[in-house]
Image (cartoon, rainbow, N blue to C red; front, side):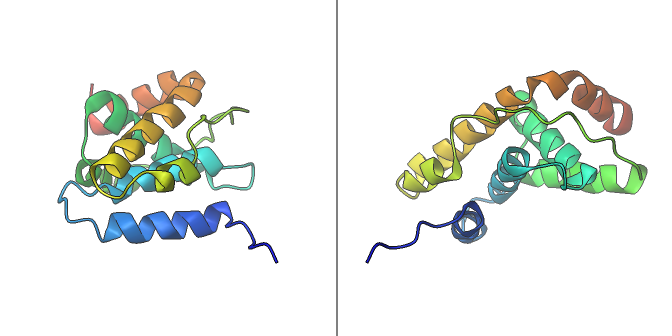
Length: 143
């Protein structure tokens, strides 16, 4: 009897266990949360979750923010703004999937794969870059 393949959500729980138990104070968990959310969003997803994921990816990939810094930016955004416009959903959301991240050896290799995953997903959302950068600048003063 063949084993049932794990769903994306089950894999997300597995990766969350790894990232939440991680000893690095930079809080890599936030990057995994943002990559997963941006890659798996659909028309039923709340606009705030899509926007926050993209803000997190932008800040991490292009501004080199730690997960802790991204989390702080999310908290600041949540206090300042109430309505969020959903970015257009790209058909392709990146070649690196959560299965690829989990296939990497725990430790340095997996951590590097989480960062590569973030960059890959952010590239897939480049059509939304201009409004995300503008939002970060206008709402958070980050250029």
